[in-house]
Image 1 (spheres, rainbow, N blue to C red):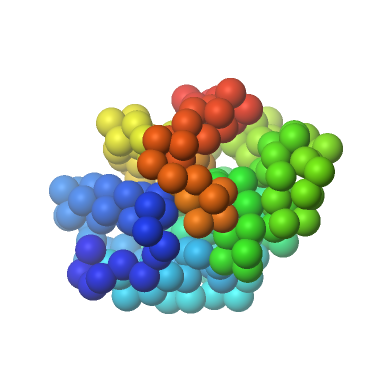
Image 2: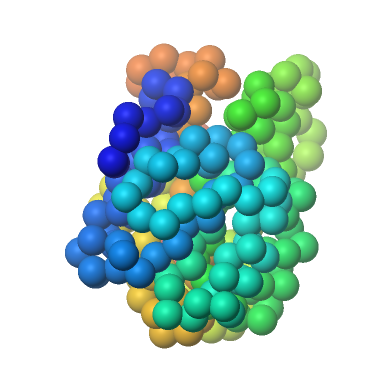
Length: 221
């Protein structure tokens, strides 16, 4: 990280960013990459890494990075987005990018809530989970992004990892970047900590991620 992180204490975003940057440096792509940030917690990554970074409108980071890829195909285009930006307001753009097999990497950080705005119910909120807007517990099934996209894009690399398994996270991000370098679409969803909105402390936060894994199966799809 090039500057002090602006994320809440215990947030999983810095874990994702640190490994992403390390991989880019190892592959000598850090000067040949553009990182687009959605509105939401992802925008706090602004200027956090010493790579080309810019902010987009909410839910528009995927088409923005598709446009950049077409204008500058020599660059690796990465979209960093939360579960709301990916699977709610940004879902249409995400699905079409996958169907077209646009060679961009989408990193979806899934913490099961709209974290930036206070912890409201999100597309990935689990059944029974209590949030500010589902105080009795959600009665809607969570959106499963990689599983939904799988049938749309046969050549895409799709995977789900978690911030409490850094070996797997590192492996999947590496494979996703290699896929984009081979001119194919890639998406890695990352199950992430959000102790501020979950109102959890210490081991409780990690236990919540393990609970998430029972709904959001980690692995390659």
